[in-house]
Length: 98
Image 1 (spheres, rainbow, N blue to C red):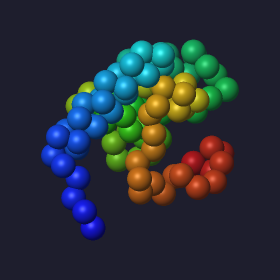
Image 2: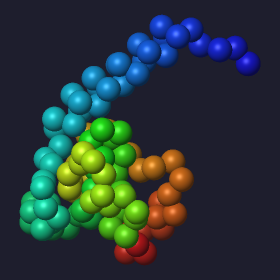
Image 3: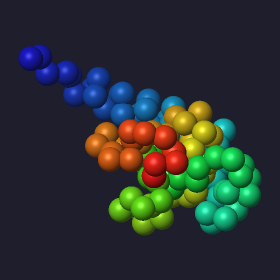
């Protein structure tokens, strides 16, 4: 397996961070779960770790417990480029199963 040059790795990290911040401007972030639920009552509220771009469902370890983050509706979070953790036991099934 060939290793990538360091400049390419660093450049892609900077691009990813800039792209994430540009996309995140499209999502409406809230300080409280109640405010996020009022914004879009039909959607699931998730906690977004704004530093990593990963969101967590209620009941997960990091829901509301990261250094930087906010509540957002899942649909808007997906559109803004936020994603679930790679290993997520909540990822299979419907939102009703959570």
